[in-house]
Length: 430
Ligand code: EPZ
Image (tube, rainbow, N blue to C red; front, side, top):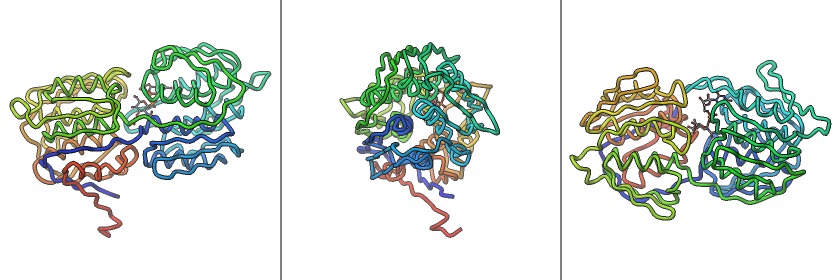
């Protein structure tokens, strides 16, 4: 298994380029199943998760070609409606094929995702919403078996209020409703920028959607959708990770190709911590090379749904608080088990008390390098941020977690002065 070796306390300086958003690319790729015509995506990140979803679509009979940041998709020849456990178990976002398959083909058999390191993560709201749209759904042998049970054989519009805000739940229902008969209202909908990006692609494909970005999304169903081209939004979590790295390492870094308006909650917290933040149309600059007292200020955070502070930024911001002046409370409200990085940060010398869904992080003047283990995607990003600031060498094991959501992270960080390298068993022969 690949590892990262990082020698910390190198000044980070310069420009890093943002990639397209993983959590936008995945639903956009699934949306291609809604039409027989070609969908072209640009600014696509080169990630394990994107490759996994492409493999799933090919297993359904679709054509998927990725050439760098370009992805060309055609679901004209789809003739298989099952997403196997083998594929879904490696990436739970595979459940995003459920809505499109049901809407276009009237049937789908999708493996239940199962548990995940950060929480139980059920998909009951996806199922409840699709049942409201007229699907007959049973869970058999670990699979969601869905069939459209209306006389016309098409889903029919409905009012759906989800019990909690769910991102992929909103995306699955929005996609399904595009081909339903009549109007659908999704109430308590997620408002993430990735939802708006998906709605923009679906509109370009001929869908009628209003209210995306708010908690009430209205979709007027149409008979068919056509092909379209779409540029994927920047990855606000990747951008946020680089900004946290720059602050922890007291650097001066500009992230190019970002969308500042998607980052308000995080930028507010970074400013509160003492960072100087400047933004332009498509860039964000963070300067932490002249922090008052030489250390960030401790800043308390509570993760919530967008536009609040993202749960996917919690671990990276915790790493910053580990080095801060003072103590901070960090409360995780979205996932029940998203503090796996705490023990690993403590191996680097951090002082953190866990109390249920809240951690109290007592800042220390310095962390020291050690061998640590990645447990999930964003936990591994938090360990990278901490290691960049730690004295000496850190080795992070199991970075396959990182590769799922970060496009060539070590190359990009080296570009702004980090001393970081990938150690591969294949190379070291161990
Ligand atoms: C999306 O996951 C993201 N993944 C996650 O990013 C992100 O952490 C999460 O939204 C929250 O922002 C993708 O977009 C591919 P949810 P999703 O449904 O949609 C509960 C990353 O690091 N819930 O919004 O799976 C659920 O258990 C990943 O890139 C139900 O109970 O999250 C959770 O507690 C990790 N029943 C809460 O709602 C349901 O049917 C929010 O989950 C659905 C959700």
